[in-house]
Length: 416
Image (cartoon, rainbow, N blue to C red; front, side, top):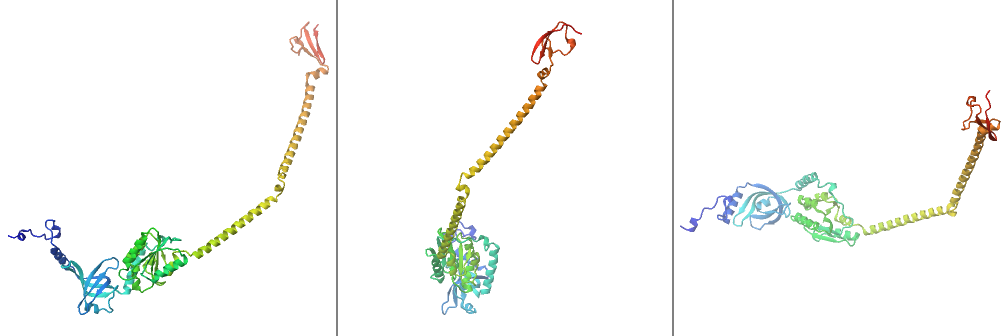
């Protein structure tokens, strides 16, 4: 028995394979082909990026690319299906295909065997753009609150434009005409066709990562509706919304309004307008500085004049001509107050003297001495007690008699 006959049977399912029992490449290719063969005929939409049609052959080949991501498939289609179209298919055209997926085991590639092909009309594309516009607007990507102001004088302007395009010339020349020293980081990419979305988005991400780039301009001249469709692509619109650097949209002319205009932080009507918007006008700024300096000079001169007038008015006052004048008024007031106080004190003293005189007279009138001067006498016992009652006196008692001028002793010789 041979070695091949002794080998264990191959697993039926992919999940049953192991390192000891793997599938050979031919079997994997056959399994994939069987799985793909079970798929139904389907309709698929994409963008034609390459079409190969050789004279005398019944089959043409094209590459169908997803317009939103960098992904494509090869397609084989009968020449008579292409000839049945109303207009020839060109590179960049949007089409829908009825096709059957086919896996080629020999080359290990997947392709589509197309049966029918139809162009996607401009009206349908615009309807899809309008639907996408409503979806993005509902997410808030177009809100004015999320838009950032452009810098007054950017360090460097990032520019995404076509290769050797008039839009690049319009932006750069108009910006340098206004501010001659402005610097640019320019990325020349495809701005139409199947690779436009990927190249513009990649250039935007590259410029957004540069710290010295303060504003990014995406510029392109006018064109047909189909030419401007990449600037309404959802992937590009979301990339602009996610950028940290302010973005200026300068696509087409005034009548062209791709979705990029709505999500950008500033919409320029033309590339020329973008060049005028991203930098200030040096001449206008110099004129503004001159005007500001002149206003400041006039304001300062008026202030000095007012202060000088105020000083002159202060110096012309009497108090400044004779600084002692203000003291004279206070001195006179103090003198008047002192005189009034002196007079009041004297008046009070005189009144007090008169009152003392009256009191003295009253005291003299009411004093015992005054009574004695009128002839009365005061009789006292030897111990000084005043005799007030006749019964207090005894016979032969020695009494003291005080008269107006002196006193003398007397003895009681008898009582009646």
